[in-house]
Length: 640
Ligand code: FAD
Image (cartoon, rainbow, N blue to C red):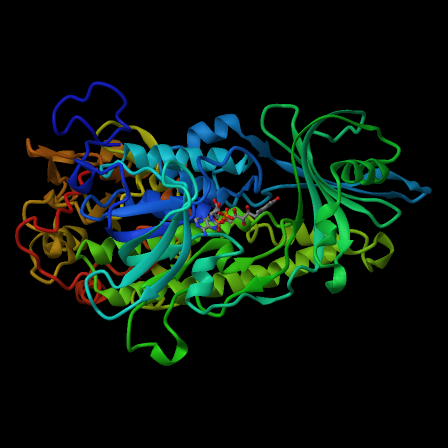
């Protein structure tokens, strides 16, 4: 994190200086906003947190509840989400308070006495070391708290507007604020009264019963609600030995439990299978009482005792695999004719079972994807066409997730005698570990993802997949670091220059590329507004093949050590050497002749290019940052 570059900061450096619309942010929701987000669930809060980093953009997030979520809903945080939290600055704190999953146990009927259960197998949670981040369990409410803190500390000083319920919207004409939104006060002195807000863009993050979805004529299609689970967060006395281990438990009677230990050492969650729901049931399953859920759980655990002493939360979770065919308001006939104004994210456009623990995680990635795109368009960095990539990218991800979840759910629902291979469930869990960890997303070529023509130069950074971190050594202070962790969620593109073998500053393709990036009129960096720091839009980092002692920091080209802040200080922390004990060039299959890796603001690899491919680099960014701005009128002085 960079601070003190505007002068000494006394206090918490996470509190960024207020800027732009954050300087005199009105407490009341204004009549006109750039972005109106509906719903403070994981999808909405992440989109809002990302937009809070754009001081020129007025974003407000409304929520029908009167205040923060207290308890309940999702709790599984996959490693990809923890990686995302790292970019938002709270991974370490949430890891410290969460429960960490390292292993899963599989319990099955005892072959000698099917009325009893026995532990049949154990499987490591991340056998292949997919990520340096852990798989966590923590209440959704805490995740939302951290995002709320991030946006409150951001330059825009954002906070949710509670007690406002979305009623409907209209998109009319091409005016500056074409979306007219009707809201109802559900709390406070104006309770019961309606008001209109005009927005440039609306993000519907209002959950599975989304009214924003309805207002743009989208419908969820798929299995409506085929299976019900009683969910309870409880503390209990029990002699079940794996009560602090994640378990899939199948009893001889066909009942099953997914047991998830929770943060704090005592609390645990049980998803107790309530079976298939008859379409004629008309929601009757939702009347299942907590006593019935506990009794069912106790029977499945036999011969172990379950003596529930306190119920923190319970619910009947009845959800099918459902998906909308588009995630924005552009009808198929309008594709390519107009760009979207309204987007839907998270449960509003895809729902799946809780068994793969994906609901909150995938929803957050929807928010990350749309957040930076809206920020770039409204900040004047990119054309509106960028916004069409949101639905194109995320609809496919949701479809793949639903296909995976159907497979996993049907395996979980099988009776023990129905398995051809007794280890089928645990084999599937291990074989597909990358999917539930959140790392299988691979975006197709588009205006923000290049063709993988030069993939051979960086085999460990697949184009379209998230940038997988690896160790490096920072040259200026000799610190060993993870390269991927030096990328905050500040809305910037990243250009990683993995140098050829020449010494820093010696005549070489790396030095020539550095000069081109700094000086060529067609360099993407030339789009940075006058008056803003040279690295305000693009974070350019260099990684040399020598270790930190082999890099002369004074010889490193200036584009890698930009001058920042009002005192024009030279920023030295973008220059890295290779860790001889964990060589990033080896670990990520990087060509020793050097390579450029371009990474999107949401951490996905956008392109891999040779060091000499300046024309391709310029062509990649030309449609994305086509505007050559003068003056700092855009107000986008994002100085991290
Ligand atoms: P949500 O988290 O649903 O957030 C939507 C927000 O929008 C809410 O705060 C809501 O109050 C607000 N809102 C809704 N309508 C309006 C409106 N008209 N105007 C203003 N605000 C509005 N997932 C799991 O993985 N495991 C689980 O065990 C699990 N259990 C769940 C239990 C319940 C009861 C529910 C509701 C969901 C559960 N989920 C579970 C799903 C998981 O919580 C979601 O996948 C995830 O929260 C989706 O995030 P989201 O941001 O899209 O929507």
